[in-house]
Image: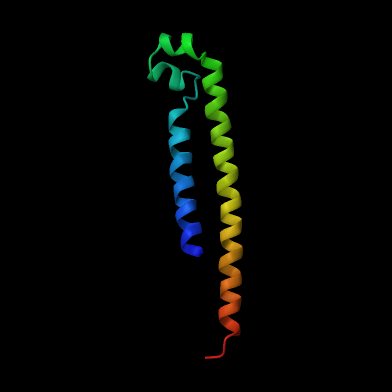
Length: 86
């Protein structure tokens, strides 16, 4: 269980890094990188910025929740291990 949560946390971290790197702090971001004006005509610059921002927030929340869950599972596993006589 702990291994699965660790792998899931690492995957969310990688996706979050990608989502942050796609963004451009000056608002150019993905629309100028992938197609320039064609991307603006097809999707609209504001729609892409909103989409990437929502993905970033969802991934950040998922990372926060996964870290809390993993710490609770590790703590309960450590408590259960200390109750077993050796």
